[in-house]
Structures are given as structure tokens and as C-alpha cells.
Amino acid sequence: MLELFKRSGVPFEVHNSHTTADAPQTVYHIRKVFRELELQGIKCDIDYHSLGNGKRLTMWNLIPGKLMPPTRIARYCCSVLKETGGANRMISTGVRWDESNSRANRQAYEVLGRTKKDAIGITDEKMLLTDNGDIRKLFEQCQLKAKTVVNPIIDWRYSDIWEFLKAEKIKTNVLYECGYRRVGCIGCPMAYKARWKEFADFPKYKEAYIRSFDRMLEVRRAKGKGNQWKNGHDVFLWWMEDDNVEGQMSFEDFPELVM
Ligand code: SF4
Image 1 (cartoon, rainbow, N blue to C red):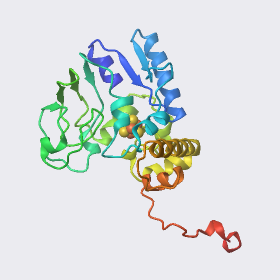
Image 2 (spheres, protein in one colour):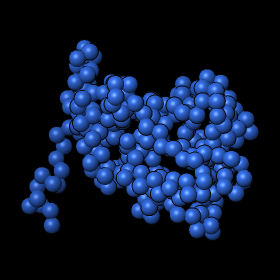
Image 3 (cartoon, helix red, strand yellow):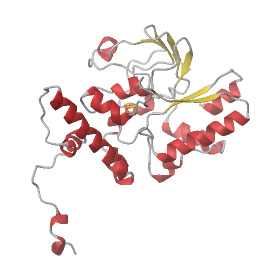
């Protein structure tokens, strides 16, 4: 996207929303790329979010505040941590149809801020700027947030992306060389089962989520809300869609049996 914009000659600036759940490699990559762009005279900004009391808004204090973990149908974290900027601006995103499972209902123009049910009658899920999917369009408008969105690579396939990057010798986030096909927040519910690898690679983030879930349960109790979970670890297993039965034994419980 950056390379395309540089070649297009269209004036642009670059923003990154700091979610606090990105991998360190992603944060370093963004800083490095921004430094290079700034040396080329391109304005870059990292947007941090405030709680309003002098403290930063993070994924870790957002979860207790929302009383539930972010899920695929309740991605409040994206609305709060990623999509608050850009009012009255034209925004460009890298969403692609190729990242969606089906391919129907393609058109060139769409109105954002509607639900997917409004658009194609499948679900009441709210559509976010960062959603991939068939209902995304080349040009979109969000009247509520006064944004116009263009998605220039919406019809690029996975192979098109990598052919272009290799042909043009464009450096990417090192995580793509470590088996990652999709790089977003560690633990993003949209990563489905790939989250197990993310948490194996970044165990401190797993601990941070569990601590955050523990605080979430405390707030739920204080507000008299019912709890289906005993503790943060319990929430974590539910959130990860872990199908293991409670009390189920593992080979790690019997080291003498492990060859
Ligand atoms: S990328 Fe995923 S985890 Fe990160 S803010 Fe968006 S929905 Fe939440």
C-alpha cells in the first residue's frame, strides 16, 4: 500500500493505531518504516489512546471495562483502539476479498456503518473498517464517522501481494518469515486457531490476557454480573475455544510415561 501510494503521486500521510497487543516485531517494524518514510518527507503518526485520566487506554484495561473478552462478533477493541481516527478524511485500508471464504456480492461501491445483515442478510454483526470479506468494496462511505474509504488492493490475491513485494524488494514485518500468514494483535479472535501458535510464540501476551480476564471477573462481580467462569485462566480457555474437558489429564502429568 505504501509503495503504491508513493508511486501514485497522491499526497498522503500514514497512521498507525497503537493497540498495545501487537507483537514487539510489529511495533519495531512500524517504527523503522515510519522513520524511513519521514526521511522521504512523508508525514507519519502513531496514534495512542487515552482513558481521559492521564492514563493510556490499552487492550488490558479495555477488557475489564467492557466486561467481556473481545470476540469475533464483538470486536469492540477494533472500534476503540483502531478506528477512532480519520474523521473527515479519505482513508485507505488493505482489506482484500482473498482473505474471505466466499466470493459473492462484489460491487464497486458500498455504504459503511451498516450491519452485514443489512448488506447481505447473513448476520447482525457490525461491519468494521478492518473487516475482510465479500461485502467490502473498492470505495466505501461511513456517514456516521464522516469517512470515505478506498481499498485499492481489494482484488489482490495472496500470491499477487508476495509477487509484488519480492519483485520490488520491499521489506516486510519479520513475522511473515516466521510462519505468520496474518499479522495483527496477538490473540485477535479473527485469527481463529492460529492464536495457539501466537500464544506459544508470545507467552507473555497470554499471561497479560489472563491477568486482564481476572480483573474483568472482579469488575463483573463488583457489578453483580453473573459469571460462568471461575478465573482468568478459565475465561482464556473459553475464549480460545478449547474443547478439552475440565480435569482432563495430560501426558505432562505423567513424565514417567513420556519417552
Ligand atoms: S485486530 Fe483483532 S484484537 Fe486487534 S483491535 Fe482489531 S479485533 Fe481487536
